[in-house]
Image (tube, rainbow, N blue to C red; front, side, top):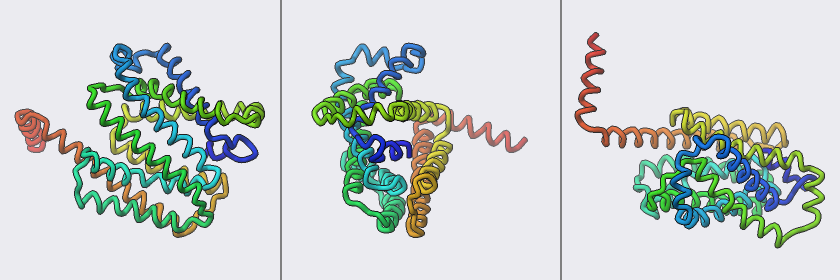
Length: 306
C-alpha cells in the first residue's frame, strides 16, 4: 500500500529508482546491523571465508530479485493493490509447478486438488476486476515468475553448494547484488524529473525504504520465534489487511465476485499450508530414532494412566 501511494504520478512514479532506494537502504542498514549485533548473523564468518563461492550463486539471484521488485513496483502504476495482491496469492501454485519440473517436489493429485482451489479463486478475482489493465497484469506475472525462480534457484544452489546461510546473512549478500544492476539501469534511463521528485518527497521515500528493510527483519525474526502454524495464520491475516486497506485507503473497488474469490484463495492457501506442516512433522517423526519414539510413547501412556 505504501508503494502504491508513492508510485502515484504526482509523487514518485519511478519504479527503478524507488527499487534502487530500497536495496541501497537494505544494504546500508544490513551493514549497520551486522556491526552492532553480529550475533544475528551466525553464518557470516563462513560466508566471508567463501565469499567468491557465495557471490557466484547469489549474483544471479540478486538480479532476479531486482527484476521482481522493479516489475512489482511498476505494476502499481496500472493496477490496484487489491488486484495485485490477488495475483500474488497464485505464487504457491507457480512454485509447486516449477518445483515439480526441477524435481524438488513430488507430484501428487492431492496437492493439485488443493492448488486448484487457489487457482480458481485467483481466476474469480481476475475475472471480477473492473479496471483490468493488461500492462499491470503482465508486469505482475513477470514479477512473480522472477520471484519464484529466485526462490527455487536459491534453494537448489545454496543447498547443493553446502552453504546454509541464515536469512539476514543471505539478505546482506543479496541486497548489493540487486542494487548494482538497478543503479546501472537508473543511470542509463536517468531523467532530471527523478531528482526533482526525490527532492519533493525524500522523507516519504526514505521512510518507505526503511519500512521495506524493517519488514524483512520482522519476517526473519518471526520465522525464528513463531511456530509454522502461527506464521500461516499471520500470513492470512496480513493478506486480508492488505486487501481491506486497499479498499479503504485508495478507494479500490472490490466486486462481490472478487470478495468470494479472495475467500476461496485464503481457504486454499490455508489447506496447502497445513498440509505442508503435516508433511514436515511426518518427515521429522520418520527421521527420529525408533527407540526415542518408543520412549516418548511410553511416557505418554504412563501419563494417561496417571
